[in-house]
Amino acid sequence: MIGRLNHVAIAVRDIEAATALYRDTLGADVSEQVAQHAHGVTTVFITLPNTKIELLEPLGEGSPIAKFLDRNPDGGIHHICYEVADIRAARDQLKAKGARVLGDGEPKIGAHGKPVLFLHPKDFTGTLVELEEA
Image (cartoon, rainbow, N blue to C red; front, top):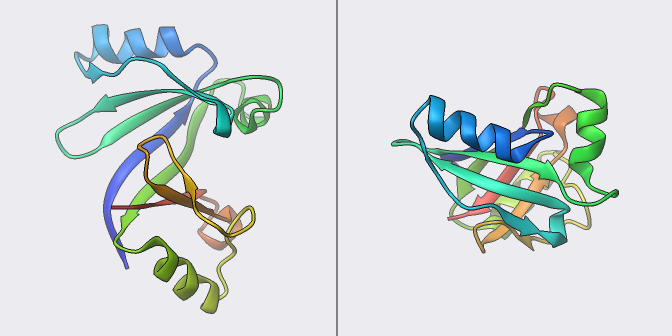
């Protein structure tokens, strides 16, 4: 069902400092900052030869990333994203096997402009999993 690893998302308090670390210290190719109002985050994508890293900074008071950073003051890995060929078919298969889909269960448009869903971390060894339709 799952395809390649699309990205690993890291929550940060200061996206400019984190971007500079990846760009200037590690020599990575980094994108511009993009405000994702529907998701309450600002994102920067770091392109690697085999995947991407997504930096997430809270955007506004109600950001789910703000809550994560309250529990993890230094930041850290927030979620991993796997690609799937058909997100609705993947959702239906996972739900049939007892996995919980967060939200209303309907795909939303993610940072790459493609449909995404999130799966409950308690069902996946404590890891928040995002599925993105490839």
